[in-house]
Image (cartoon, rainbow, N blue to C red):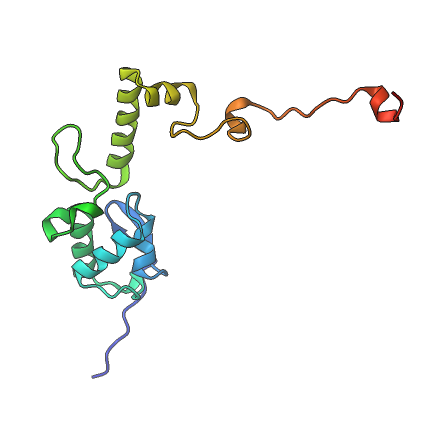
Length: 160
């Protein structure tokens, strides 16, 4: 009996995110907020899934395994340096946050900085760059519309 080619699923659901089934699983996992190339590569290795395999050809067991690894990487022996939230301010543990949890925690961190009125919090509240960049020539969106230099009508005609 010849093997029957599995039908391509156009959407695969991993970590409450719809992934494009036509892309390789290594690239498709990057659509999940909080998953980059290195993390996606490690997830594929830990789950035992071929990185080049298209996401739509994964069977249900592989999708479930990928979902488990992405949502709880600490359980599968990921090194702590790969996590995006090390030494959490609340409980001091190493975590890897994804999707809406990442956004929520990031917003709470910024609110905490603003409430403390530390330098970074003040810069956030003023809409200025936080990490020491210069503001003379950059960050135009914060300053408003660009204004050119108006020339004197006499200077335009060449008379002085």
